Length: 246
Image 1 (tube, helix red, strand yellow):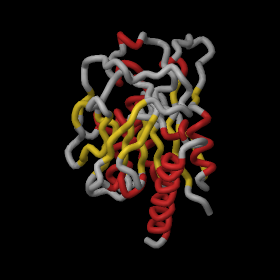
Image 2 (image 1 turned 135 degrees about the vertical axis):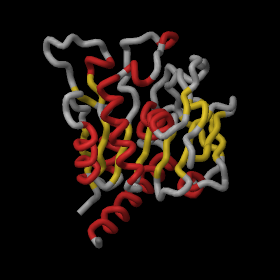
Image 3 (image 1 turned 90 degrees about the horizontal axis):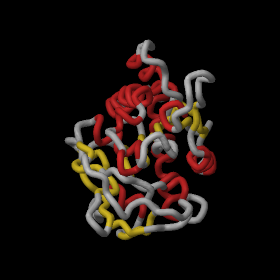
Image 4 (image 1 turned 30 degrees about the horizontal axis):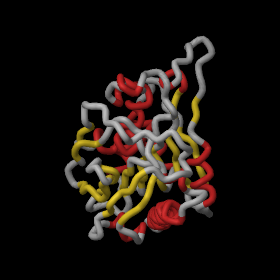
């Protein structure tokens, strides 16, 4: 059986400003689903849950069900202007609280985890790193995500380099906030040409990686993005088999 990948989702009330009259929509971009499925894994969407739920217990049960965790981006949030973007918790409070528990549970269990854009920033913030307070410029392209926008330099001593197989990768870019410092036990593995941290990895975990760009959108046209997802799914499969043998 193929490994199951839990994929975090957004709530349109928090991203698009939908009214609560119809409850909004739980969603994620199709690129995430397709990249996971085309990498020979089973995608499983994981919705944020109400605050009155026992979030820690719910997160633990979700992590027990999956073989890997994909933390997605901000869901094309339009509720705030780019120049007025508040902290992550203020942007999507319901989502933040549940994902915070998911990340801690996944980290504690050494569950293969890939964080993308907001998901990467969540890993950094929740586990003790920091997000810069200022809005950055020059990192939000207007073209589609299948088009590269700028380069990143990859640390040749990192696991991320072993996965990608290159030390310079042209990637897309859709963010106005940036990770300022990685959490304890993590190292910076990728930097943009202008010095923005574009990737981190947990030193003592098998696969716990965050990237600022969107490899799922590059996936249809970029072999390195395909390799990143394949290695993620491979790690999830190893995790699944190790749990079965216990």
